[in-house]
Image (cartoon, rainbow, N blue to C red):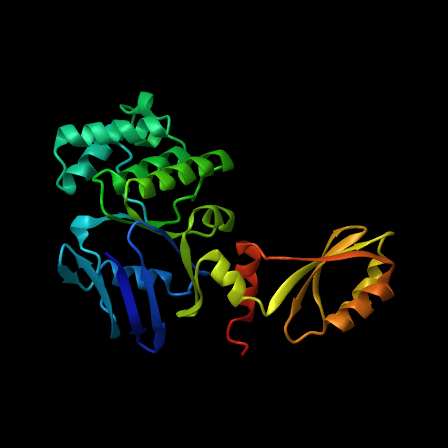
Length: 306
């Protein structure tokens, strides 16, 4: 059971929202859909869920021997950008209502609601009105409502929204449990550290196009045209002098004796070394793989330059 997207395009009036986009999502994986606002993620999700159709190309999903052009609603759990629970109703009534909308019997719906509320440490508040909860706790209830009917496919738009670091970690555990239960999760988020922990593979989009696609290791290899270097000096750096000498290199200061430089394929390592030794006595120069946050920033900044 694999979702295959092949060369899809989508146009709105004079705007091309999606351009020749191809990728696949494997059964049972957590797949991250990344990109800045306006990248085309929402247009893509609308096509994956069948709300709109691509103008060209195709989306294919085979379930139980039957082929579909989008993820069928009966097998989908969806957390949209615009949330839709009822603030005046109790937490448990909200969850049972949404489970029943998806064909779950009331008894099973109640069991599932209580299971997930306990996981999020909200079971003792199940009879309270939803509006009495903090924004972060309301977000947890929203997440439960998306999976209470135990769908095979789950699409979550910004599941970490409104959560502090402790509750973000709880959502990480929640998503890991969904994967362990065999659900396939498509995750759209801006918290790169959380995505890096969770995603098996990812697609980074910008301006309707695929910028990077694959595992984090794949993406780090695709981005090998740029490396990040840590320069350590034996004495304090003269900032005014270093700024004059480093104008052509992207850099940032870590402290008064060290800085980080991003070196692209177009830039010379020998020239960088010469520049660094002109700044001061260079104690060490180390390269490191970029994390997802830095890869994301660099990829979006450089997209379309070539």
